[in-house]
Image 1 (cartoon, rainbow, N blue to C red):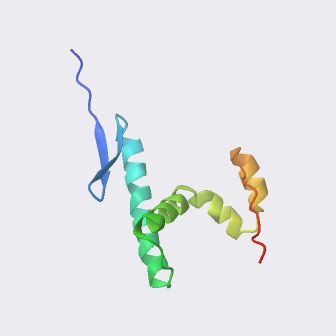
Image 2: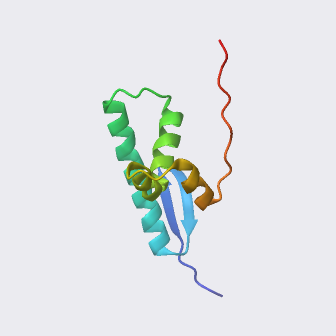
Image 3: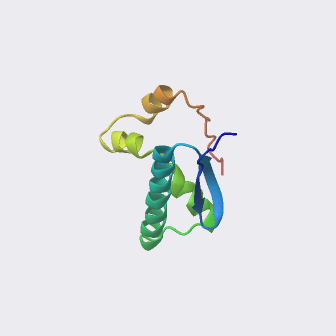
Length: 96
């Protein structure tokens, strides 16, 4: 019989990650902590969103902090998205 140590990351009472890698768990926990701080900051700056939308936004920003830094330094979004091999969705403008 094998003994396996599992690390569980909970956020606001919800299990978000289960892993056997302590480093991975710590990294994910830190990302969630940064996301919480981002949400507080954005709300303090007057950004009003539903709680779930704010959580999604702050987690996305936190997960992508390295690429956001590149954007702030002037790298174009298209080049970053190609680099990530992300799916790019064309936005359609509303016609009034």
